Image (tube, rainbow, N blue to C red; front, side, top):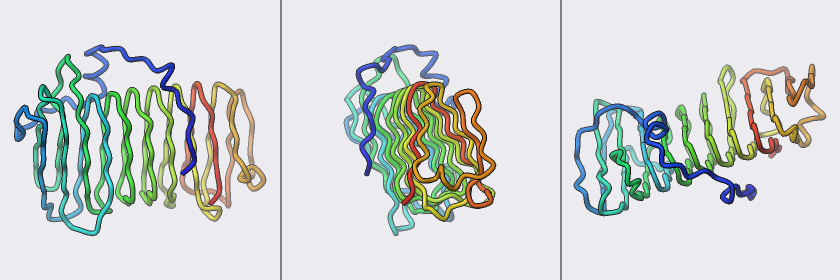
Length: 248
C-alpha cells in the first residue's frame, strides 16, 4: 500500500461541540451498551444491510468477510457509552456524544454487499473488501479504502489523507475531497471515467493516465478529461494537498 504523507503536525484539535454535532448523526439511538470499556454485538440482517458507524475520538476499521452476520466490537474509555439501534436491515452503532471526547476503537466485520456510512470526528478509518455504497465523513482522519468495488463512493474529510484502491462502475459517482490532505487514487488501467480534478495547490499528478486522457482541459488549478470514452464520474478535490492518480 503506498505511504501517504502525514499531516499530523498541522491538524486542528478544536473541541467545538457545534462541529461535532454537524458531522455526527443527530438521530437518537436505543442504548444497548453500558458505560464500560467493551462493546460486542452480532447482527443477522435478512438481506443487504446498511451499516452506520458514528465515532468521536478513535479508529474505525471495517472489513468484509464471507459470513452473513455483522460482528461489531469496540474498546472504549470507561466514560464512553456505545449505543446501537436496529430497524430491519438498517443498523446504527455509535459513541454517545459528550464534551469529554472519550476514546473508542471500532472493529467490525460485515458481508461484502453491506452499504457503509462512516462518521468520525478524529481517528483513522479503514474499509476493506466492500461492494456496497460507501460514504465517509470526518473532521480529522486518514481514510484508507482498499479492494472497494462499489457503485458509488463519497469521502469528505476536513484534514487528512484519502487512499483509494478499487473499481469504478458504469454510471457511478466517485467523489473524494480533503480540505487539507493528499488524495492517492489507484485504478485499473482499463477502467473508463470522466475526470474532474481540482487542487488549489496546483499539485496534480495523473501518472500514466495523463497520456490517455482525451478532451482534457486545464483551468485555474484543475484538470478535466475523459479516459477510455468515459463513464463513471471521478471527482477529486484537495484544497491544500496533492492529487495522485495511479494505474494498477
